[in-house]
Image 1 (tube, rainbow, N blue to C red):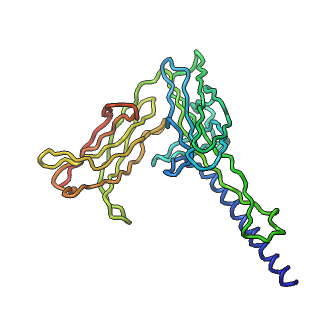
Image 2: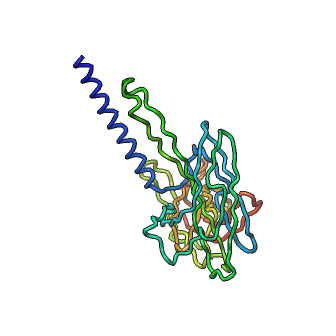
Image 3: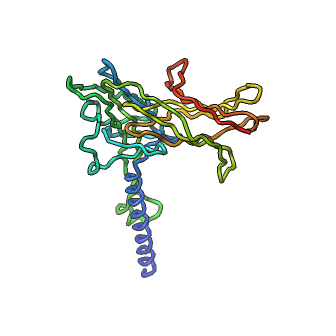
Length: 297
């Protein structure tokens, strides 16, 4: 009997440590505000950004549950900033710029909480409340969709008498998209610079590095296309990356583009032409915003 009690006590201690570890994992996940979309994301959000400009006052965002379980999402507005590598990080309320040009006060949205079964969708409606004396500029916030986790009972790692004491603390999943309000702004000017080809230290695959520069009072959003042009003038597209942004007030961001070389093509005896183009899933033709060349001997 004493051995049984000792075993139960050890199992309880192990379970407690596991629960503490899961709680710590959840806290770390909540603090790491990185909203880059995962390939296996159970929530599909469309479009990936919303821009209000001109006379536009209404728009919508569609959520689709792409997972296998029913999920509930809380919808809110947050403030964020982009670093020079393109990662978007939430700004803590204690560090908000009192003069920051945030869009949350200009946007009304509903509903603020949705529950979706597998394959179900929900429209989030957005309304711009734009005062007539709004100063010229670009205002931005992020619309955040955060899953509300459902605790699940642990039943395989503790004895029956202890099941009610321990729970699996699920981590929450979050997706955020920028909501931009433009008032009296002009399109930003883009340029490319500091281009160089290097090789990944682990895979040895060729990579294009450089910087995308922005000037003006609007953010940039587009795609980067890299083309190899041989001595005969024949072009081969060897790299594409879509959804590349430089958000206000940043003046530049670093770019890193994997280069995929087809058989018979090598990065020599030619040049690399790099273009930054507009990008819209609905567009039939994009326009070039910036272009640069890199000679390859």
